[in-house]
Structures are given as structure tokens and as C-alpha cells.
Image 1 (cartoon, rainbow, N blue to C red):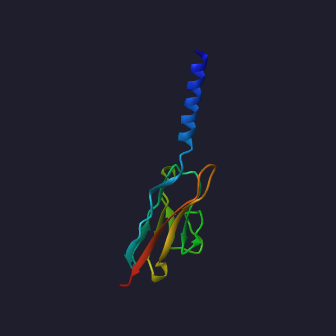
Image 2: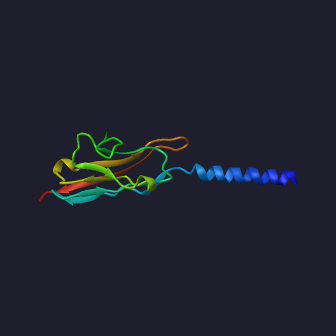
Length: 125
């Protein structure tokens, strides 16, 4: 009897641990957009099993972890952190915003770095 109870406890611990350490992944990866100059662009990014910190990059340049992005007053990272939503909003889009963007999720204990790309194409008026 004791050995079967011990086995059940070990099996329960293994299944519980496996569930606790599911890798973070993109529930909603960013998608490429085409927007008209002067309009608003929203690049979506939602992460399941979020463990690491999230930031956006523009043409390989990291924009930081804050919702207010220094040096980019028209850019805002917004969403619902409890549900892993970290969208990037760009208002009054200009040709300078035409670039490759990347949603980046940093590593955390037992979680790998994940990245997903999307391009923003700005169409002249």
C-alpha cells in the first residue's frame, strides 16, 4: 500500500512540474501591416506561459521594456500584462516608421528566449 501511494505522489509531482514549466510561446504573433502615412499602426503580440520580460525592437534596435518608449514619443507598448498582451502602437505613422519590428520575450528560469518578426510598410498619401 505504501509503495503505491509513494508512486502516485511521484507521478503527481512529475505532471505538476511539467505543467508549471511549459515553455512561453506566442499566442498571437505579430503580423506584417501596410498602413497609410499619418494613420495609426498597432502591431499585436500576445504570449502564453509568459515568464520573461517583453520588449519590441525596430530594425534590430531594442526599444526597451517600458510602456513609454524613450526617444519615440509616438510609440507606446500597451495591452494586458496579466494575459501576456504587449502590443506596439505607433500614432501619426511616417515613412521613418517603415521598418522590420520584432516582439522579443527574454529568458527566464527554464524558459527560452522567443522572437517574432513583422514588417510595417508605410504607404505615401
